[in-house]
Length: 207
Image 1: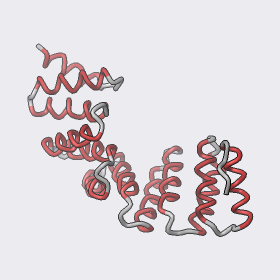
Image 2 (image 1 turned 90 degrees about the vertical axis):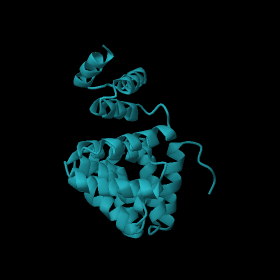
Image 3 (image 1 turned 30 degrees about the vertical axis):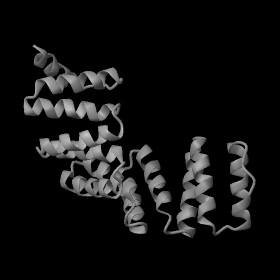
Image 4 (image 1 turned 120 degrees about the horizontal axis):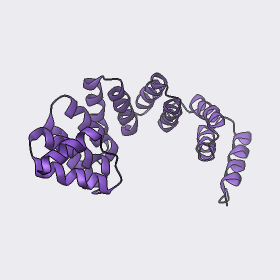
């Protein structure tokens, strides 16, 4: 197949591939990704459902279906599709990461930790999973574990603002004012919106 010059041409190529071989899950998936890029989410969802119907092992398609659910604030749907993703591909870190994130949102902290630990075990460069795991540890009072996960996130990207914000909170918890101030200032400098109550504590810690 020739290289597409733009999104419309790529979409036409995928539609042609599907017409020639309607049972190719990858073509449906590729079409969905391109449609999502254009903001055509309803069409993309139909293409993704066709993808998994024809290729039930296409874990990436389940994750995208979960993402579309999340856009609609359908946490249950997102959870369902990500569970299908890890069933299709048991070592699929993104599926575990998303499940962990949803469970964190729902307040199921132990379940969140279990899935986020798996996500980071399967993919040690999964920065978002490290910061979500750090949040979950902090909620459980595991402050040192939370700090460790945030520092791992910063090893991957030293300018990852959520990790600096999390570290500011963790160091406040430990009474390490200097480090708390340092990481809070870094988060703010990177454009992160630090919670007003944290900023208030940081200001008190500066004195």
